[in-house]
Length: 121
Image 1 (cartoon, rainbow, N blue to C red):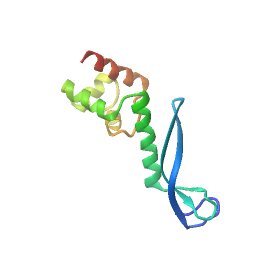
Image 2: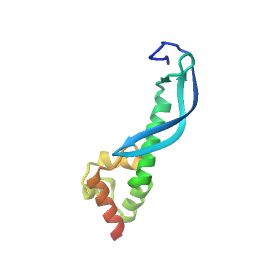
Image 3: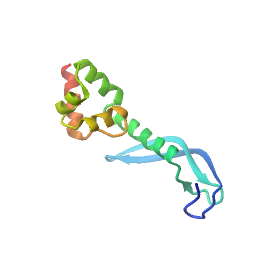
Image 4: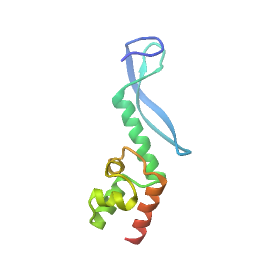
């Protein structure tokens, strides 16, 4: 890994204040990021950067949507396979899997259908 600004290859990791804007909502948290020793610029690190993105999705879903655990719990409570549940909420099975893994955020239509199923069950 090297800095895009000064090409320095010496880096360090420190806690960083993250701020993401997802669907108009500010998501803030602290997680480690990699920085350049020379100019203190953020340096790309796939593991740290991906972990931060997943944390942002997790916090958004927890605060404004629905958690991956609640989706799985509801699907299991209804006794539905991923394929059948995906059809019921109007998405592809692969999309549902990404919701259940916490790697994406349900779109508004799917979220509303999931929440309506939670009310009735």
